[in-house]
Image (cartoon, rainbow, N blue to C red; front, side):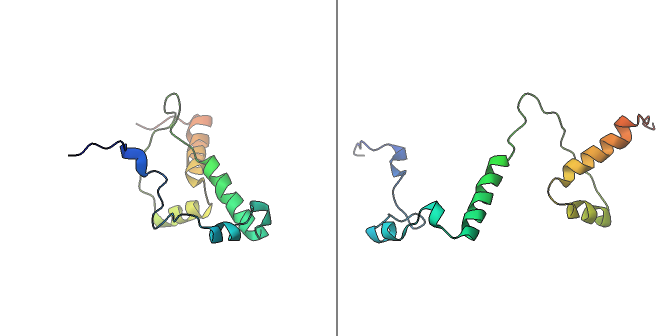
Length: 107
């Protein structure tokens, strides 16, 4: 096998079907962000902001435990109807009911 000076990562930056090389025509049609239509600027800004808010893994030690539970379809529909963060709402509701009110657990 002949030796080559190319590393395995040399394909980085090579145009392909999904990322074609920019031509002079493409550069001529390109627009600055501030020149885009307002609706498109708002959508792109929202996408960028949402990507910044994504949570990563819990840092030091996990403070919450993943669980699997079965809920009635009507209850689940109401919870999901609350929008993003409905799982946090479930956690807060359970905490308020069982922890803050100090109701002892039945055995």
